[in-house]
Length: 133
Image (cartoon, rainbow, N blue to C red; front, side, top):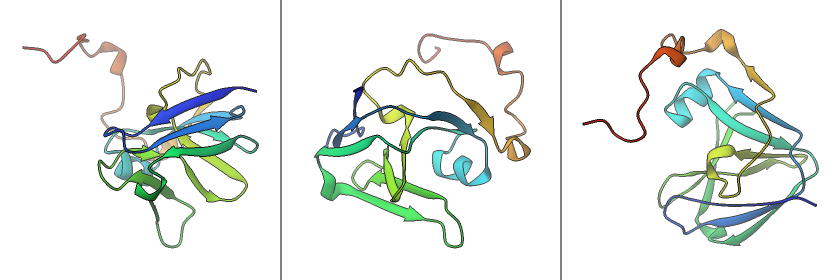
């Protein structure tokens, strides 16, 4: 069984995911753009893996957008995105909150009809190893 470990930015929340991920989607929907502040969310999905909170479970809160299935769980101290178990049969784990490296490549880009206008030709944008001077 594969084990993944993760945490929030401030270190209050830590967790373990026991099992495998079924898919890895880069979601470009407007809801994911709003809740990440970026061009897309990068989420891993599993119907069988189990989530175990190691610490800080009481600091985890969730928001579900009324009238949708869109849910975000996060640390109420630092705001970091965290795994969501709001749907009983599906575990959704933001890839960026994992401390364990994930070897799985993204399965697909989804909701491209909502893709940010500026999210194109990004391979041509200059690249820096750290904040440029």
